[in-house]
Amino acid sequence: MAKKVMKFGGTSLGSVERILHAANIIKKEQGQGHQLIVVVSAMAGKTNELIGHSNLISKKFNKRELDVLLASGEQASSALISGALNDIGIKSKSWLNWQIPILTEGEHNNARIVNMNVNDINNYLSQGGVAVIPGFQGISKSGDITSIGRGGSDATAVAIAKIFNTDSCEIYTDVDGVYSSDPNKVPVAKKINKISYEEMLELSSLGAKVMQSSAVQTAMMYDIPLNVKSTFTNRDGTKIFNQENIDYTKTVTGVAYSKDDAKITLIGVEDKPGVAADIFEPLSKNQINVDMVIQNISADGKETDLTFTIKRNDKEQAVSLIKNNTKMKCKNIQMDDKVSKISIVGAGMVATPGVTYKMFRSLAEEKINILAISTSEIKVSVIINENNTMEAVRKLHKTFNLD
Ligand code: ADP
Ligand code: ASP
Ligand code: MG
Image (cartoon, rainbow, N blue to C red; front, top):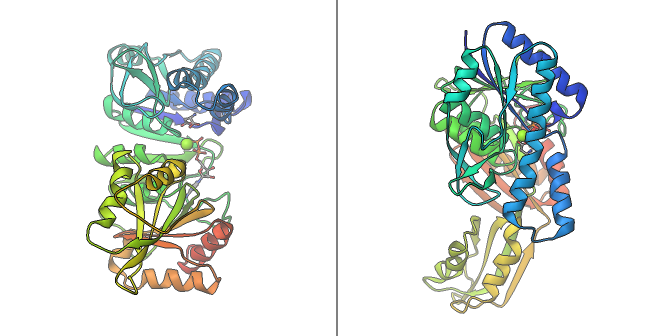
C-alpha cells in the first residue's frame, strides 16, 4: 500500500464526462489499496473566465477579492470530483483551503504554501477515504484567501507530497508527459522518459508550461520525484527526478519558448563607471527583474547603447522609471514587446563544445536575427522577433536531432 498524490489539471477536468473519467482513474488506484490525496485544478478555461469578469469590472480589481474569486474555480472542481467518486461507490470528501488549513505567505495573487495541517486528512485516509483538495490556493496568517500564481495546482501537489510525506506525486495532464518541445505546436516532438530536476526547471521557467516552475523547484529542493502522465491514455509518462546518471549522448534535451519578455534599448548612454548601476538601481528597488543585458562597446569612449530584457508585464513601469531617473541620461529609449525568447536546454551541453555556435548558425540559415543572448551551464536563450517564433523552435528542434 502506498500513499499517493494524484493531481488533475484543467483540461483533464474540462467537462462532466472528463470529471467522471478522472473519477474512474482514481477508483482504479484506490482498488489497488493505495491511500489517495487528489489535487484538482479549475475546469479548463475557468480561471481565465473569472479573470475576464474581474477585468470588466475594473482594470485594478481588488487583489484580495480576486483571490476569493479565483479560488472558487478549484473549489467547484473539488466538489464535482468528490461527488463523482461518491456516486461510483468510493468514500470521498473535499476540503476547502481554510478547512485544512493550507497556510500561505506572501502577497495576494502570488502567495506560496508554507504549511498544512495533516491530522484530519490523515485520519480520513486511514479510514479508507479519498481526500480531495483544491489546488492553487491557501489562507494567509491574517485569514484571507490567497492564490499562488498561475499553474499553481502543480505547486499544491508537490507541497502536499512533501508535507504528507507521500510515496509518489503523479501529475495527470492532457499530454503523455514532457516532450522535447510543446507537442501541440511541434508535432514531431518526442516524449522524454526521464528528465533531471535541473533540466525540467529550466524548461518550465523558459516556457514549457507542462509543469509549473516553482513546483519543480520545490520538488528539486526536497527530492520529490514527479510522474507526469496522461489522463486520456495509458502510456508511460515522464519521470522527473534526481538523475545522477544523465544520458550525455544528447546535447539538447528540449526546446522551449515564451512570449513573456520585452526588450528595452537605451541609446546614447554616457560611457563611464557606475552608469549601469545607476540605470538598474530603480528597477531593482521596484522588484523589476532584469534578465539579459547587452552593452555595446563605445566607439568614441563617450557614449554607448545598452539593451536589456524584462518581463513584459513590467514594461510600462520600467520605461517610466528610466524616464524619471535623474542619475543617468540617454538620448533615446526604445521598447519592443513583439519579441519571443527561444531556449535550448540540456545537461549534455556541459560536455559538448560548440552548442552555442550551432544554435546561432542554424538560426542564421533561417535568416532569423538574434536580438539578445543569455547562457548558463545547461541552457542558451535568445531573444528574436515574435513573428519568427515557431520557425525558430522547429529549426532548432531539427538541428539538435530531436525530431
Ligand atoms: P494542466 O491543465 O494539466 O496543468 P497545462 O495546460 O498547464 O496542463 O500544461 C500542459 C500543456 O503544456 C500541454 O497541453 C502542452 O501544450 C504544453 N507544453 C508546453 N511545452 C511542453 C512540453 N515540452 N512537453 C509537454 N507539454 C508541453
Ligand atoms: N486554475 C489555475 C490556473 O489556471 C491553476 C492551475 O490550473 O494550476 O492557472
Ligand atoms: Mg498546468
